[in-house]
Amino acid sequence: MSTPSVPASLTGTYTIDPTHSRIGFVARHAMVTKVRGSFDEFEGFGSFDAENPGNSKLELVIKAASIDTRNADRDAHLRSNDFFDMDTYPEITFASTSVEQTGDIRYRVIGDLTIKGVTRPVAVDFEYTGSAVDPYGNQRIGLEGTTSINRKDWGVNWNAALEAGGVLVSENVTLEFEVSAIRSTEAA
Image (cartoon, rainbow, N blue to C red; front, side, top):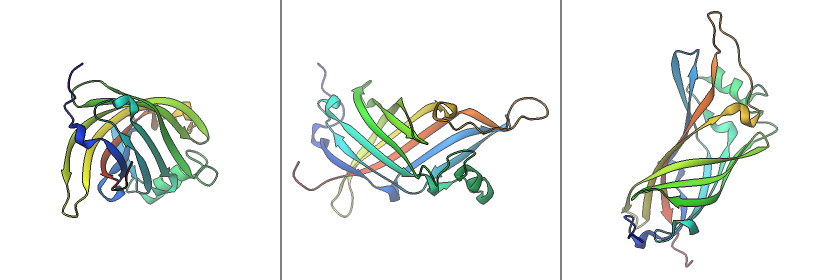
């Protein structure tokens, strides 16, 4: 078995720092451009085992109403029953079921993604981007990841046909994760 490239000293329990992390998405609009957005309110925590990644875990809770695409009318439409029905389903959640190392600094996190009360498995490919002790003495670890999903698999079905053919909003959506997590100082 090869020695992991991520230092074993980074093993521990972590909390995602929402002020230095981003959970976003990209969807094609009108078949010609991409619209990017993010969720501004979320919390996440988990454990990372650098020597045995299979022991690692991740849980994430996103406040669906915190969606931000830099357009208030579009955000209101996304919050409505046409898309996320955020009054009925205020949270989007992810809970890992397994973690595997796929390269020196790459990991595949497989877990259950719940949107609009529908839970389906997804795999998110992450890359370790580094670690540092910040000026406040916090051990931080950085990870970036993406996955592509079909929004209709979660009952997010609204669309409009375009006059020239095609649809207004793509079915495929890329989810993006840029994470800075802080290791807990409590004993494990």
